[in-house]
Image (cartoon, rainbow, N blue to C red; front, side, top):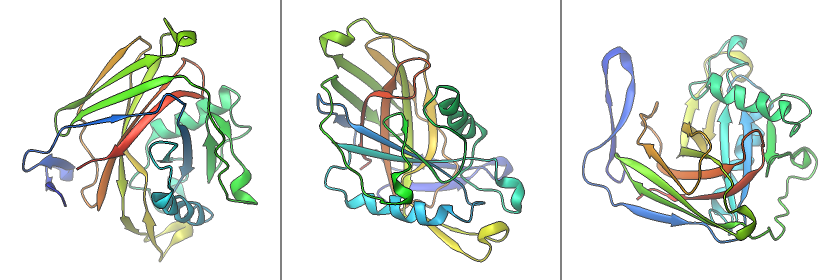
Length: 247
């Protein structure tokens, strides 16, 4: 798939590798803040597949990457129900608990949506995104060398000059298929996109952030994308986000 293959390493770990040189790319946000939609989900949660299916449809959203960036974090706190989620991470569960601690959400549950750092319960009764015009915060540029690393640069508007920000870098998988052999979703094959396969976060700083290329835990994605966003320390709301497809 476009130069990506997988190989088995010691212990059965799957690692995505570059089998031929991949084109470096530059992705840039508009000056207006891009909407970041987070879904907290799990293969062990019987009410999550409808939310995952709805998120998949956002691949065709006309504002994808320039107005809207969706990401799906798989939590691990339902793994004891009989089927461990292959995408789950304790770090993603902690991110959701941090949202609660910071006042962004009232409780920790799945499926749980967070839109621009605030709990978004509208999905449960009217799953339609209403993306209003955002404030001007500055352009975020993501320079990616697949297999090597990524650099993130921010040109802030004056009201954000001198503010130290945390940076997040994630690789997303699309067209993933997971047969479920136990638990609440036993017998189902779950189709998913926007799945966070890798997430890295930096300490607060200004101007520029660098990320090494991560190891990936799966190799069966039909397509990959990269996304990055900035946030203030201790604040769930993103300052700016950028993303796009890998070649």
